[in-house]
Image 1 (tube, rainbow, N blue to C red):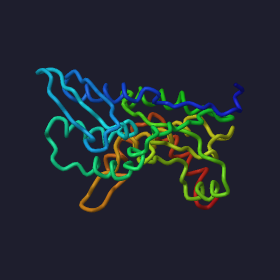
Image 2: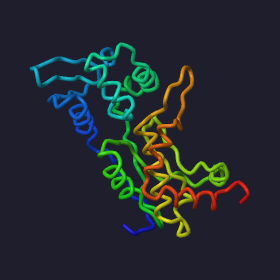
Image 3: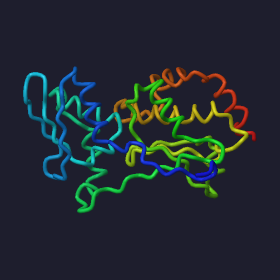
Image 4: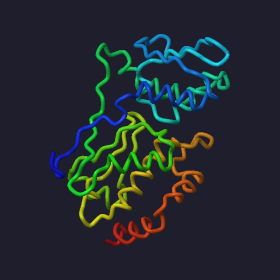
Length: 236
């Protein structure tokens, strides 16, 4: 495959194993037996097997859940959370997929561009900053007439919790765009996937104070912020 051809890849090809490992890491070392079901009546059920192991039955839709929903599932499994707004909203958005007789189609990620390959960037950032806890698809966005308009608004990437997918603007797949800036945009969207929005009353804050603090932990933050301001300022 030449460098100019898009690579097709489902990043989280073993999502069931990823979810099981996520549960075990956040359940104080308990062993988790995970069973994925097509049951649309009982979405989540938990059974204690021994003092150090539990059995969890999980509706298959949750294999596409982001880290915020999985974290709330852990609290539910531990019996620490009675209200589950993120889980309820996720079920509401995905119930049609769950009731389908056919299994949901896996997202195909187009990661290899002409100048930049998103896959090694995603993997390196996941290990460096997230302890490999982010599990979502990443892809270059489609080149459309709206693409340049989005760049004028400085919309260079996006994360959809509904599809659990990061999309990076193809405008960045350019020889003029430095690798550190592509990495920064990917890191920014991975933060969204990892943290989810913060709720303040009835408002959902996507760029919270904690989000901005963590954003500045990126190793080339100052250089990336400076390059973005110089290249994508509204005056240009």
